[in-house]
Image 1 (tube, rainbow, N blue to C red):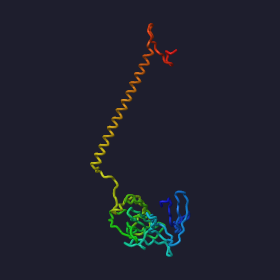
Image 2: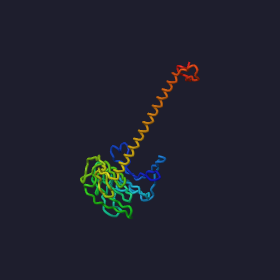
Image 3: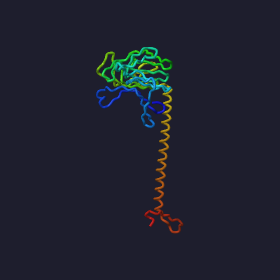
Image 4: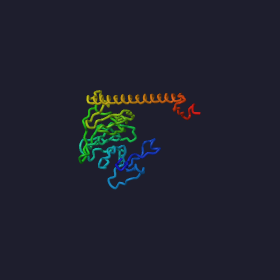
Length: 283
């Protein structure tokens, strides 16, 4: 979504009730815009350089308002084929793919992961895309691909049709279909979530906090705990004092009222009890 609250959706595959069953709808190359402020749809008309109809690509919105579309399946004269991902881009050769993921780092890199190199938009066949992880440097022109050196132990499971987001240089990769170096006709679904450090290009095997707590943290925590305990003790003491004071005052007032009702005026004195309305002696 752009800063003006609009979502730009390009291409994709048209579906309806019949197509859903066959999964064989036509590809599109139109740009639809959803205004999230007014909840209205509109379309943009291309004048030049209209992309071919395509689907299963990635769209990355840059800080300069450009949208980078990578990979996917395109509809050409020869049918549905994977888009060439190295055209007009320098650097390492990246296998064409669809159903991959892409995230943008703070320092101007697009990290792509996974994908399907089989030319199949129906998800009936899958083939691992190599490399699993590739980096597109958008800080230079022309853009440049590079392949980081990642061991199999540090790389997440090869996937396609998964989802990915980035948070503080940690790429979060979730679910999808497992891919293999051999063409697969049966889908194996992934139910795991992987964390991948895009600075060091290494998989994070555990998110559990370390058991060692710094001494400064321990001292600060101990000091805070002591202050809390002291505050609780003072609060309890004050509360008990107030409650006891109220009990004593109430009991004294009760005894005083009872004593007043038992006083009898004697002849020759100037004192007579003042009876309170509502008592039995006030008749």
